[in-house]
Image 1 (tube, one colour):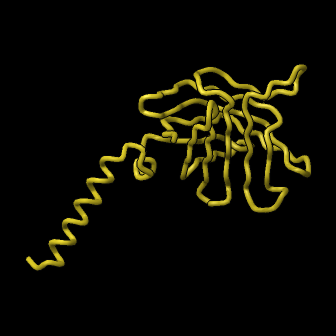
Image 2 (tube, rainbow, N blue to C red):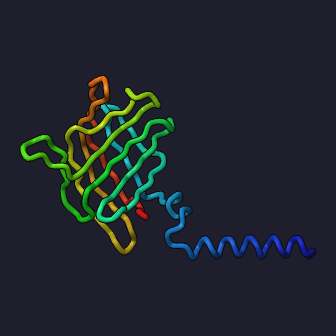
Image 3 (cartoon, rainbow, N blue to C red):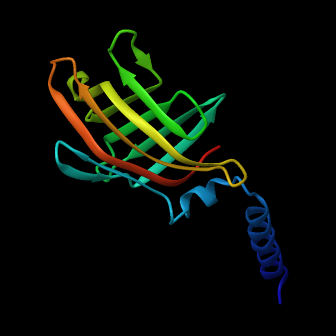
Length: 159
């Protein structure tokens, strides 16, 4: 075997070893085939092709991007334990979650939640995975509505 082949084999083995040792590797997130995020938007099924979940302090931020690439759904949970989190305008208002959906790049394509709920049904701190459900009503700047229903997220790995 010549020196170039030996060097290439060593580099490939080293890369594979380093990737297998990184539990929080981005590769793990990309191949997490058990993860999903889906819902209905005004009655039409929507599913995230990519998902990024982050824990910031005591909050979870979930970002899902659909197959078009410019259809993005974000859900923020102001808490990190199992339970139901609400966004209401009741008196007093409850702001325990927030969400938005964008299906384009213009200001009118951004729909922000005006009321809704997120339920965290599972928080696995050992494996850093969360699962749950969500629904919300949203409006854009022109006061058009989007109803996000039957939302679920499952086995999302968070950083």
